[in-house]
Length: 280
Image 1 (spheres, one colour):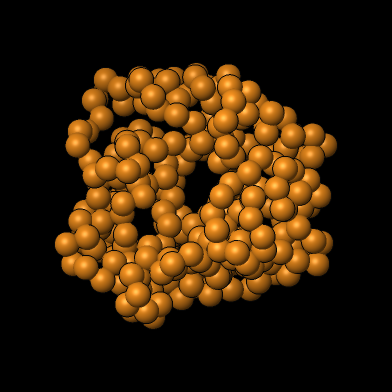
Image 2: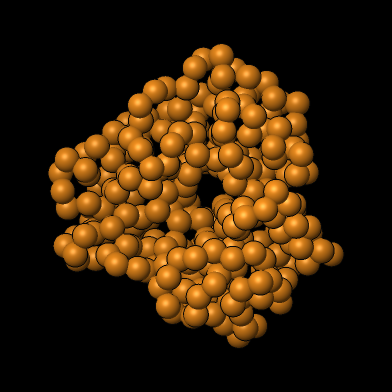
């Protein structure tokens, strides 16, 4: 089982490898820079080299980098839209220097311009990004959302429409966030709801496109569209919901990353331990 957490890059980015190793992770996710600001500085070559060296000495098989929250590839505003495209291209190129395999992105907000125009905008943006990084080995994953406000990606139909419009599909895939799915209306807490969710994902997108699952319980009700993560088994999805997920043989090659609350020094360790017990 590929299991890890989102780890901090505090201090130096290469220290994230040590943090993941200390938790016995074999995969990990990071922000490569401040997720709430536009890029100010580039990573130092020495830090990139050290990151790669430490990873080589670890058993981290896959590295996922989540792009900053400010990037909006569905924006109707040209300055933000074009800036987001440039930033995403820079992030992919930086991810490649680090040796990361995947970039994870939300699908953006159409800002009340409408879902159809928003989907068209992000599809055009992704085609530009993939074309301008054509020689890169880094793939890009579209993450589902809770559906609050004008955010796209709260139903699998959005991913399907976007992927259908991608010219070069080799480097495009999906990330499935359990908290986001539940509060968007996919009932992962019941066996019937889980089976229906996976069947819909397979039919509209294809499980072969699923590369990453963000394992997060949720504090909020089904279809509430509120994005508040909770510890595994402590929220609305519950332990049995996650047991079905991590035990599903169809998902045996998918990576699982925890983005659960870090409200204590032991929070990540406890959540990882809970998931490992569910897998047994």
